[in-house]
Image 1 (cartoon, one colour):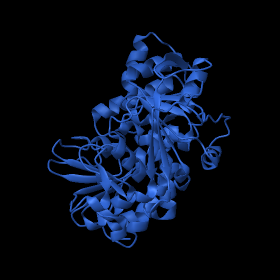
Image 2 (tube, one colour):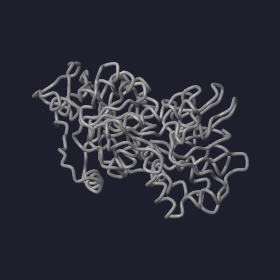
Image 3 (cartoon, rainbow, N blue to C red):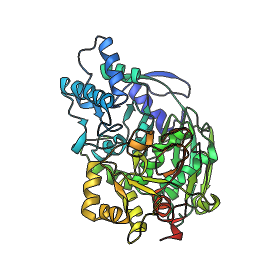
Image 4 (cartoon, rainbow, N blue to C red):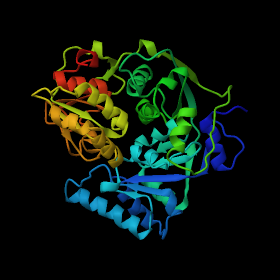
Length: 420
């Protein structure tokens, strides 16, 4: 029987020849991830289980990224619990401060996520690693606790939806625009508990970083996981970061897809998702006259080096609108360092922007850019739910780095073509 790549990965990790959509399985895990919000609760449950050691210290990754640098006593205690656990169990993959960054940018950067792996993380955007040909998905903290102790988790095998991208990209259109458009077509529940397999010749025009952005937001369509078949660009990207062997898994040509959505990328202009759902996506030319108070460029979705380069290209020699706060957050310390060496951070500061150390911060309304009542932000983050970035009567618009930079200059949501 033909299977999708996701089904093949799950079958292999469950020790089965084949699996079908809807089947319940127990599978061994290649990597388990927690952060400073989700891991502390998992650690409490881990200890309640009576577990005395993690299943494999090399396969448990803990990252302090959401409320770091710690914004208050409570977040400091959360981080300390995680740090103490990592020290007690001698976890080599514990990251914070000058060695860290935002988890879903950091793990691929460190070569910890590879094709064919089965990865879970106590964070919904763990689906990011599907861009590298892995099965990865988010779980709850209690599931993380059991996984840290046993190295196993149960899954219901997902059915699959295929999205095929064809045509030639328009200027300033990247992975963020393609996935916002896709979510706009599918809706936030359109891929509930499905594999969202992203494919088509147009993806060759999207960088691996852009593909990570696309997979990251698969959850915003309700998907259990996103998946992209690795091509030569993907393999070269992975090989530059690790020498650990891996196996590429591909869907059968007659794999069972519930539905197929075809998208002509030449018809997709830079996108903006209006409040309060990512599915409210439309071309920037259709947004209208919308003034903003704040622009955020960063997050696990668009804080990578290429995102900063795009933003700096637009902002070079210009000034941020006097009534706009521009906050730029490189996703990892390595990205921060490279952006510093390339002069990108100078461009942002000279333009009147604020540059932060890597943190999830404003994305979840945590710190470094919380919105007041009535304020409006345009952000390169991945969610714009009510109250997501602060006050429940604030608004968040989502876009890619090109639209974000243009908006920072003009003070209202703008196409990059208006300022570039």
